[in-house]
Image (tube, rainbow, N blue to C red; front, side):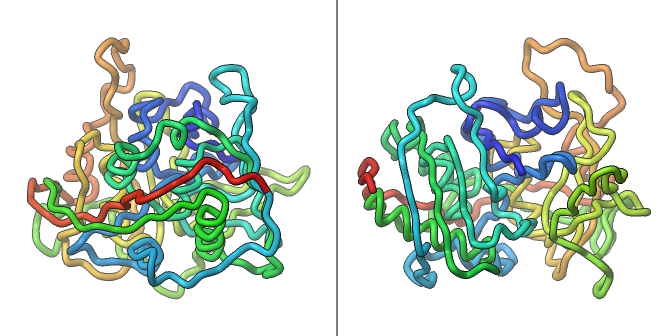
Length: 351
């Protein structure tokens, strides 16, 4: 499995689909917003979950909300070393990880190993605390430059062979505190947000449906069998074959994105929207709809001013696609958002 963080020189989208670029490529702010899985070959998953006051919080968000009440878990053995070979953009080593470095539930168990190479400390913190786009921007503004630029390798192991992805996050938090003396806390701040609401009360769009309980909905990445056809990326209805994450689906090009998810709450979906819609502020779920949903949405990504004209001109804008395909719209509001604040961090204490 190969996973490259957007803050580590290349977009995951480019790795999964040649020629496909991600929004705000190269920008650290795009790390959180572009929370997708790209292609069955890579299954790279970035930051999804936002813990916004007023949102319908799903259980994964509880992990991220309060660093002081989360249970303390630790790796049994861990090695952390600075990687001075540089990022891929300067001819260095490509970042790699045996665990998708994002907040989605999709995860292939590793037998208790956590092996990540050539990632910035900011990337590790983002994974451990599931930072949202807004949280990442606020955190980065106060972090020392080396947190954003210096790269590290982590090779850690737990005797708990069936360790979950959330437990790995908690173990990584303990490791960051031990080796970098990192201390953080959460603050609630008032900010301009968008409320995600229904265009018409009680009416879902044609590509948004309530998830059917009891239906097979795997979160484990299917393994490629040698000599057999590649697993299908979609089911018979055109929705993703795997649940628990936002995926880029077949039909995506540089000028047209096809995204989809199954068994995802609208609160989680709302938290993903800032990076893809180029809307510049957090989004809070105000639909009032409980449960989880399946959906696909096709739209034209925002292109740089100096980019050549797009060939896929029939694709609608992001917000137009939300309205027409999902029956959702964004309304400007004020709301409370939680940000992760860095109190203290030291450079690596060598093991």
